[in-house]
Image (cartoon, rainbow, N blue to C red; front, top):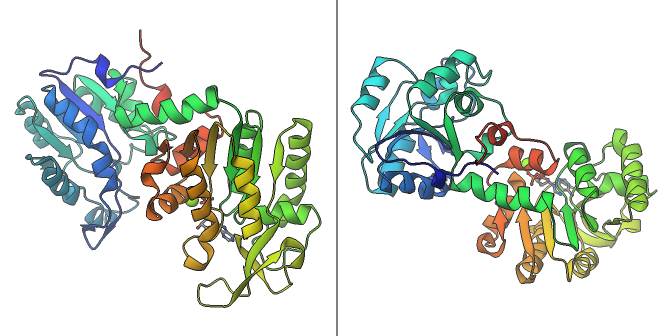
Length: 394
Ligand code: ADP
Ligand code: MG
């Protein structure tokens, strides 16, 4: 068990808090501040306990000097200040005297944010010196950035190797739900998998196969499985080089006594667009010039009855091209079904989470993971360096 922020004494301490402020921006304006809002509980807790709060995060990818102009965290400091109704001092540096002086001048409960950690080349390489330097700026380290937990960077693993450390509330929730379910799922446990490609999800399927009762496969990746079963899938998303693998996965499921369900019908169209005609047909009926863009009503019914009575559900990957309203029905209906279940329901996956939230089901799941790549790695059963580097509870 990892040390929690609640295990630390924070009063008067310089608390280094790694957050995920990697928010979407357009023309210097934040277009979605959910990640800032999500971090508020941990931030407020530290402020209330009288810690001197030193925040840092990455923002986007920084490859060139030019990138630095648009990847500054300054707008985030402003937004955070509004949300907290409190001054947030922004220092547009990632090291040096100005930053160190500002930290030394902080009073209890003050909040400071410094510049994008990726402005430092050593960040993504977890350069030893950088981790040591950042660690030297504080007394304790709290990691609440689940979104980067699958990466070994200086601002998470580097600092954690040099200071007393703990996980924040967001991270704790991810560990409790995703980690907890993977370790000890209450059965029946159903995994719903979808999204674009089989190749992105091979390790997830293989890992979940060991612990689930049933696996429901929808989305684009279903067509590689259907092809492997001999169906003609027309112009649907297909990974020719993964057909053999799909067969192996299905055999493996049989051997392990895991029920693996595939779509029995599809909503198909001749174009990948929301403006062209579409129809629903049996899987056998997909024509050469058509592609499957959503699961059909029969599949929705099949999946719903498979979900009935389940006690744990993990969902990764939308059931169709939900970005187009014509092909959002499958994903939405699964959300609706899960909302009625008396079960632990978890979404892990960037697009699946975005779909459920945009469709209005944010509060109907037990947990919607905040990290796309990190939750995938977690579902693969891998250890996440951002978590494993945090000190264990004594
Ligand atoms: P997640 O981010 O939840 O892990 P993925 O990134 O694997 O999910 O997949 C999401 C994408 O899959 C979406 O952009 C969606 O449009 C696409 N998708 C779903 N079903 C299909 C389909 N039948 N054909 C093509 N793309 C699909
Ligand atoms: Mg995705």
